[in-house]
Image (cartoon, rainbow, N blue to C red; front, side):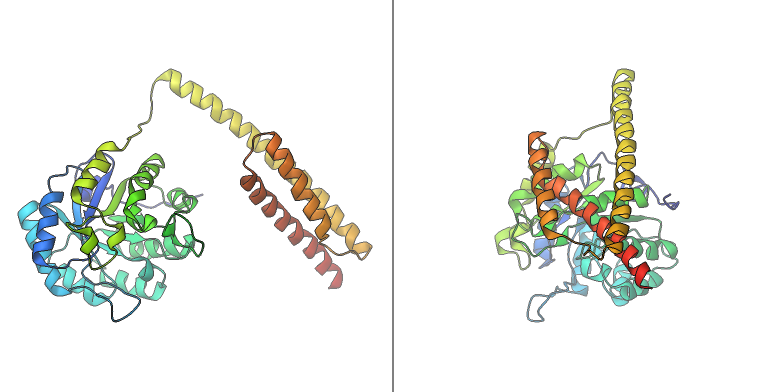
Length: 364
């Protein structure tokens, strides 16, 4: 069962809104004029409730632009006063938090690199003890759900209940369409483990380019995420950081207008049909579990037989033949072959584990 968390609803600290709530702004605050120009344009977009801007930039190389620092907080103060937008900034050190609080920032967010370091997270959480400021926690660079959940819990345990997660994708080595692999199953599992936690999607960092942002934003909403954090710039091609993934405020407005907002149906007929379909899935899932249990029982018997006759656990030719025949059958039934291959690999991994355990018991 999921642990019980008492987290304040998004509306209570970001203001009333319809999905999606949007936080937008430049990757980096570069100048007073740039920040204010973007802010004035964002203030005209109803869905945008807060402006974000990187004040301190944790760059890989020290020669790269690392942000304007404290001066940028003064520019963000002007945005607050002139537009009424809430202000969000990234913090990575206790000193950042102290300055952000000094200048009255509304929202803090924790970057992916910081989330990956429990020592840093604990330090930041302790500095925030006794404060009431909302904290957004981006997922770590690597697809480690426990690390992400742990970071959120560290803030929660120090009294931060205005809490949200930001899904920005995970580092990947393969050359795919995304800068960071979405791995949608991970934020979905976070939703299950931490009920009531608002989740934003950061399509800018997932995509790494501006052309896929609309598609990923729609996917996030279809998966019931609460909001979007999208990077905007008044001259994206000239941006000092991450120019490829930033869009014009007017482009953001069009993306938001074009999004399809799906709602829950509540008519009796709809509910009855959906419940019937869910019941069918429940029955099939039970049957699948029973079949897998029977399979593993046979695997156990096979392991004992191999042990008693001194046969190796893995026969690679048998494994190749099994994969080939099962994938052929999958094709006949219109199944996705990659999906079935993944399932077969998981089942095989468990089968090897069971047989290895049997063999080790004999050797003991």
